[in-house]
Length: 464
Image (cartoon, rainbow, N blue to C red; front, side, top):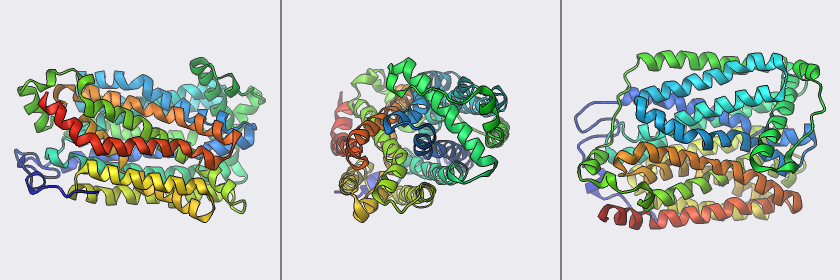
């Protein structure tokens, strides 16, 4: 299934290297600096995935309603992706990164007054601003890694950078699980406040956007009690804000060139960049594949704890949250590292196809339950890990002047993460959590097909 890369492709046809341009400039330091951004948003996103089960317990909501936790986060990606691309086009990669960091810092520091205000909309505002900032970073940092060296190694570089995103995913649920599912102390109070505020904020957003009246949760906590419960909640956000403030200064002073991939320059010179973006079929199908991949990933991550505790009643929720970080996301990171090596030796579209087929089988195992089911769900963490960066790199390849807009649209497709959890939760409420995993199974089918036909689509787009 996986075909080795031909010598003409892997030998550095453009005269560059993994971090070296055809002109001989080494961009490793710039790449390393940009990679810190992947770690940052991985940690922020990893914190979200342990909240579904906690919300179900503390607010007595069903799985469908708790699925709107992800809706609140991913809707910002949908709304902010195009503006983020416009920012990148106007201010370049460096300017766009700084704008994204400023938004994250603003969202993080907002949690200080939000804790005092004690209203649910105050917390919603902070969460939305944070997600908007992360959207800017993802829109800009992902394509930027693909141009920091020879073109043919773009998929390898983005997979390496995404490996650090995996480290953030590991730390997020471990830290979050300690505060959310740990007993007593200030952390538990903060977690309860987080659950109450975030869930009501999500419900309000869902009601406004999707008219999902079933997702509306009535607040039972007074403003004073909510403020007391959220005492100390601002502390982790304050830490994030301080770190991001430092990064803003570092990026402002650092050398971050506004590069273009050599194949993009050639495409523009040949006039290929004038072809409408929506007629680039390897891109349009890539947007759909990315939508479904993020849907599958978010669904698996979000309901992992539900799956584990239903599959084995002897496992506590806190233990399941640690398994999510210490086993699931470690496998996710290992998959990214190994996948980077595999993609450097084989055609990325073939690797994507093979891994998607493996995930398809593993998800079917998870639906069967038992010990094999647990092995299956852990296996998906490893093999789906390369999909986001690989689909991203394949989708934007050879788009010339359309690259930044295309990056915006692919990031916008992350809204798939807002759709899958409520759907999986609805199925689980009416059947079982195992049956709910039919949603990611269907997603992996399309991803496998995209990998199979990508080369034909790309050839057709180049010939037109």
